[in-house]
Image (tube, rainbow, N blue to C red):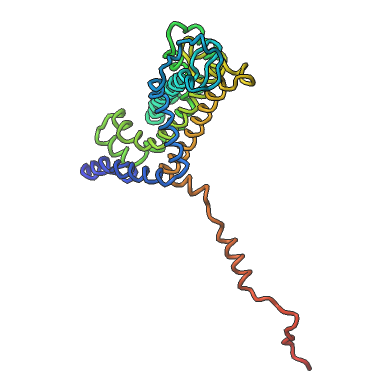
Length: 333
């Protein structure tokens, strides 16, 4: 009996026993999705622009050029200059870089916290589940935008890392509830029960057996969270609660150029265009990953027509039509 339990614990049909093959299959499905490929290409280009772009221009994002104030795009200043003579291209790539870093850090921290809390609440149950669920529900009650807006000015000396932590703290609760529900169903499966009967520790079971089975959801959630975090950072920075000067982000650039956008459009639309392009690319990649890791999602969207309708139409085609010229078969007396 112990040998069978060991075999079930080590290799289960519900657990990804060959992760390389599973990743290869998912990569093939992503490669077959045009939207996901377009999104990936756009994301790679945006990351290259954010981290290589500052080396392509001789201008620093904070250095003013007093001889060129609010100049339109030209060969010297590719995206023009602002009211202080600062190069808009250097500021845009710096703001894109800062927004991407903030979005990635928020996604990693919030997804990791959600997976830990949700898996522990769903696996242990009892008072652990009640306490963690109460904490999740309590944080869901608070309006995250207002709390961050109130706390952000008090943390000015801590830099943008404190802003990242604030965004991550209020961005994991819904994911944790989903992970908790998935874990509650997984803890009763045969491979988890076999590992528990063999004396494997609970945290090792969560790490080896539970989290790999919810990894597809966590990957999709982290991808979407990056776009949401960038939008949240832009919104908070637009209202003055995010990144502080002299540093810049896409939100601060939008806030600085919004008033002058009708007269000097290059101060606003370059940053706005990159923000919209990034969020659109993240959504395309998220849809592609969902279809690759959960094929039933794609099948649900492309559901074929019902067989009943096909039989009805087929029966209508096969049914002979009665002609008025056909004589009646009733015998005459």
